[in-house]
Image 1 (cartoon, helix red, strand yellow):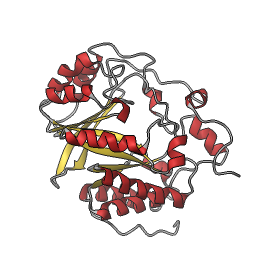
Image 2: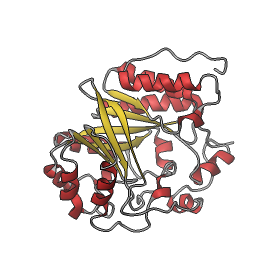
Image 3: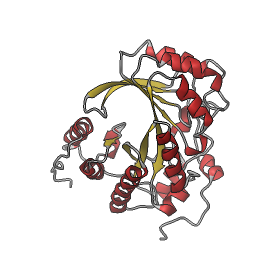
Image 4: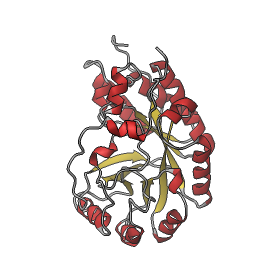
Length: 314
């Protein structure tokens, strides 16, 4: 079988494989939680993360499942500040605020620019604020928002993978040069960049998934990113399930996530985190799962390499 399918993967094909969206309220975030993260200063900081209910991202990436909790139309003015108030009154104090909106924060059809002052005001007691954005939306709106902020601004960009053919087939509609330009633009404004890296996107073997995740970390740091977050690729969004059935994708193992995290931390070029959400689905062994989960969490918070977990399953 060829590495790549003989059918065209585009936004129309990806959307045609979807199920139903979950019901959402434009005035309530679809998720919020408190966590911990190692700061650039080397201390453990408290983090409040908000998953904002928002319109669907216009790029329709192959691996994305965030569309499940999105609205069909832009949210009304005032809805995003209302969501922030709802979540922040239910969360403890923190120094870092993450606002994830299932798309690009500086897409004017996603976050109304009229809400920027209210959002900035609600974030004023945090030391730093992290938002996500596709490079195509980095421009004057980003700078206008930064000018209103008291916290230091950080922007997360989905680099995904530096494998040229796989990146093209993800329908990301972004080149590696565009990523570089985005990081450079942000850096010149004193805004730091966090890169999202995919572990084993479609069309790669387990070994290739590890190799290209490590190469992607190299590229992100060379481009000027300060943080890399490694995300194991899941099925479950319709399009990915189709690729699984046809033999073009398998979810990565926790052992591979350990390898990539150890590699990235070992570079000493910046912080590297493993995404631990829904981690058990990547484990094929009940005996070693807790040890692997605990080890990954410890590496995230210490940024120190660790010996791999030894188990009969590996």
